[in-house]
Image 1 (cartoon, rainbow, N blue to C red):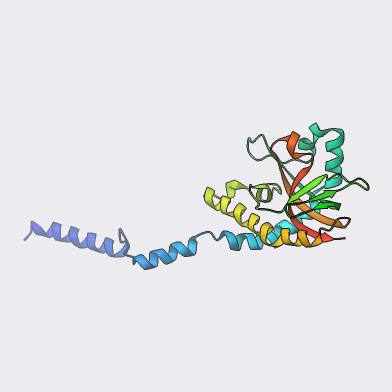
Image 2: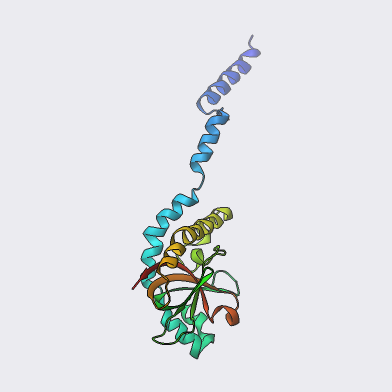
Length: 211
């Protein structure tokens, strides 16, 4: 009996410790799935709040599109340094612009805008088909990939932003764009090839209204 006593005491102490500090927890599979669902990032909800609360107010500080166009005409090599935003080590860069222009062309595929006081050549083109790429997400500088440890979440943000442009902004642009009409707009541009992307600028609009 005396030999067993130390072992009995040790077992009782171990049992007490396990009771106070259990080495594992039993949870139902349903509870775990519910917790995972609650913690999952909701890109659509995030983008809805971000669009109205941050992105649209930020258009007030976007670069003046007329100044960008004038720089393209006089010293295109300065566009990147004066107005561009580069993400990481990419050779491409982004522009975030606002201003007004006169509609000089409008069809089912695109709308052309001249930002100068005269002239019929389009300085800005708005494509009316699917929106690809990360221009809306990356051009403003409001979102930083380092804040999203999951790369898929960051990509989901881009997809939801593009979806808003497709479903809300482009239809408004179609309705406002009749040849000769002046419109105010703001939007984002990705410049991957300066020879092709600066003349004209390929705009992904985030806001538009008739003047």
